[in-house]
Length: 113
Length: 111
Image 1 (tube, rainbow over the protein chains, first blue to last red):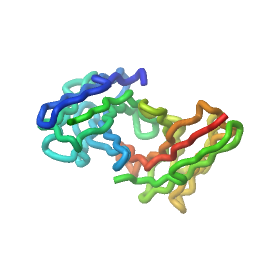
Image 2: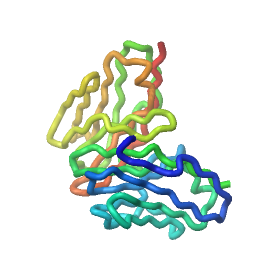
Image 3: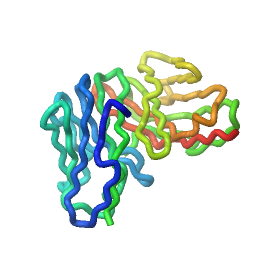
Image 4: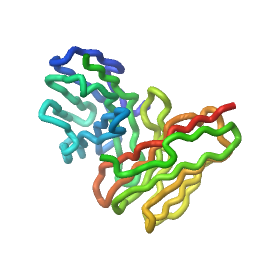
């Protein structure tokens, strides 16, 4: 997990509040991915970036979700307004090419009450 | 939606035994990867097998790939209690960069 730092590790928020999840990848990657993991739906790809440019956001569930990558060392995933069904573990991962494995962060466990 | 389905969903074995997990996928792939996830942690990359490879080894891990059947298997030999985790297969379809995960197998290794 050392290659990707996610914060916060845990987040509990009330329905309707804005939530921002952060990801700081260590350099050397060219792709960054946001995944969501739930018991019901497993691991879902939300969005990914190549060289800081969003390539595919078809997995973003609704307009309430948005992601940015202003530079190679930082990305955010924002949910506004949050809903209880957004409760999940959100992972950030980085990749260096098509034929290499990804490096995952430790995840942010989000609970919306 | 998941690209892969893993079988079995859960597996319980004793230390020293071998564990075999299977993965089936739906579309053509560039490569297939296996990951491990310990409880409450992120996923850790174990091994990658390219679509033109049939078998690959890494330590106690052996992965096979049958593209005609769209299936792969992960064998962990001489399992240890520390191997207790969930194991996921993931595929890279075609030339797309994105990795799509299967449903996972929960492995429990008891002493």
